[in-house]
Image (tube, each protein chain N blue to C red):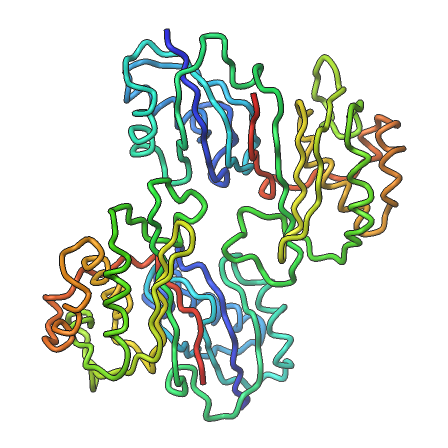
Length: 245
Length: 245
């Protein structure tokens, strides 16, 4: 069996998330698996580096699957792109060692969250930003961001009900940048808890509107209380940007 | 009666064009007129500077309408934006002299046509570009563009069946620019024949793939034969950018 790794871009607006679900729900995994089945005659199972939720986008999702077919790895790019919907693109494809796994082999993942600050409606960006027109104290938000860096128990940012072995993660990079009408929060970590980026973003916005100071983030992390953090920012602003191995 | 002028932006993907049509077809004019009716209690008729076709977009469409209501002109912006779909935005609103007419008062209009040249699928731009992955001789296309400038009978670029008093128009500016994966054709004229920009674009692409030289455009204009020009480029790449009065 060969192991194929692919780089995938998608607009998540029309999908119930990455992961295959009950029949009738369109998912990224489902679309690509179906297209692979008609191409190779095999039913394969895709593994994705990040199980992005409904409405979340990807510029650089990584997937892998095992196949007995003899199609050259590079040929998968045009062959899949032709049959896939316009909102999913295969950017690259390569054969990798048998033990490579898109999720468990990942060393770092990078997500970006895009906040639209203008009073102007984001007509062409309406599915790829979170519209938040309130006045924001950007300097105060920027003061909070460095407190996220390093190894922490991020329980306060984990969706309620999620269960994993440990809530400790290492954030390697975290930046908040103004880009025209957009405020973009980009974060790189060894891994993320469920809805962690959207919960951090919702909390940064609460700091931005003056509900808390930037330094309050230190207390919040120590509390490990999800109930003290801000609300979950909506899915449409979130992008899985890159996965490093 | 007051005369209100508005600047409007829209993503035309979901609409059967600007102009109100048979019941059941969604149009830009219909959406704004309906919203105005629920806001003012009056049924008004909107006039648009350009009657953009189905799938064509606008960054700066100009409309006007007459109303007896007393709502301050600037108030129309938030009031309409709240009720309009996410893909239509009112950017500005002002009271103008009674004889102002969005179409007949227009001195110049500017359209842009966006061509996507990369082999990569335009996932997030899929509704706002024409994907054209063939090899193009951009220099040859650029050589053709200046021949469009000035006063000409543009019959060769008019959609078959269209009837207007004269096919003579003045093109004031025409440029072809490379912007990353995009090739953008921008043209300013005192007016345009039906489907003129899309027909010019289709012709420039035929020059780009080597079917004709750039200088052949001179002959084409003189011929006044629609049948000699290139095909109509698809709607999704076209934007009404600006209207000058």
